[in-house]
Amino acid sequence: MKKWSLFLALYFCVCLLASCAAGGSPVSGGTPSNEQQTGGESAQPVSVTAVCRVVSNDGSLLLAGTDGDPNIYILTLEDAANPAAGTLVEVTYDGTILETWPAQLGGVTAVKTAEDGFDDRCALYLQVLEDLWEVDSGLNGELTYIGVDLSETSLSESERSAVAWAFAGRHGGELVTGTWEELADQGYIDRENLYWEDGILFTITEKEEPVYFMPEGMAAVTFDAEKWRSGLGAYFFCDCTSVQSADGHWDGYSVGSEAIS
Image (tube, rainbow, N blue to C red; front, side, top):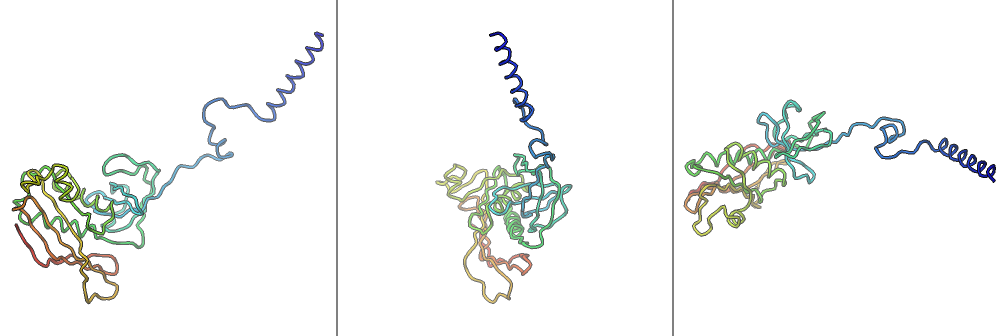
């Protein structure tokens, strides 16, 4: 009986050793090495490409995401060439995005200028906002907030955010975005007395009025722009027109009339 038991024990030991030799040692916990994960080849670093539009170039690039990306990004010129506002750029990075505002792309390895897609409407509207800031400058005093409403323009969500952020940053105000009604609902504007005590609202509204006699390959936009501090403190650019050339440049704008209240 003892010999039979010894024989069975030896038999099971031999079977176990044969199984280990065929299947390899079992892994308990941890993560397989790069070679195990990729069949003998080391894992390659992650590489992601984001296509963005240059909104401004003020010592660093302010970028707006494209293709539905609502984010805006800051990119230092150490990581990039020197593209003009309106240029599309392809940024290759390691897939990480730093949660700052604007966001920052991590591990940038390349910045390539796209051959087409140029459109500097963001720069056009930044210039309009700057021109509004300069006129009737007494309305700009003792500001905490700078409100910007670009909801009635053809800019994308990311482009609107980038233009508003750049403009408020240039003038040291805390940015708030929204329509007059939205800002009144949020308590910034005194609706009853028609007054924004510590802020001012800048608005650009595109119009659907056609522009006639355009040369072939050219486009145009008409718009109104205003800055508003109170019912008795506002300035208006009315019936403005800008023409876009075939290569995507918006060559300034003309103001049909100006008004003040």
